[in-house]
Length: 133
Image (cartoon, rainbow, N blue to C red; front, side):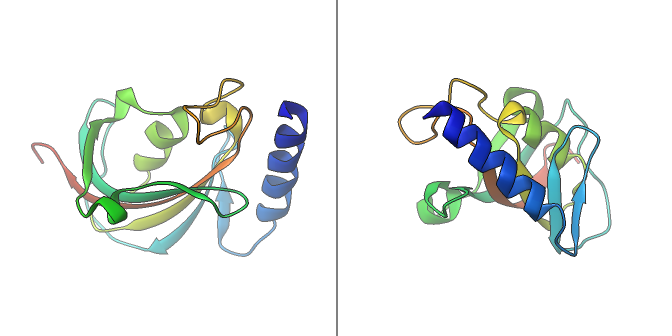
């Protein structure tokens, strides 16, 4: 199952990278700016507040701060690498869609019961604030 999930994720990302508006970083993180904003961006040591929704590539939602009705706050050093990198590209008030390869997400382990091993993930993230800024 891991091999199939890995291939599905790699195929999805390869096709997705060709879409207009999708940018790819050196690490393989893909992102699309849904709502642009100007202003300060977080650094790797910042704690951020954001709304987000996480999906598998088949569209299954595995986590959503919108559904909980309140944004989440966390240190950028304490999240998956795709988030640590991606959120530093965002300004307060912007909304991005991230397409995260498994090696920048939960890797070969997956997470809990909802994220399988080798899963590529899609996150819509809205940066609401940066602590102390």
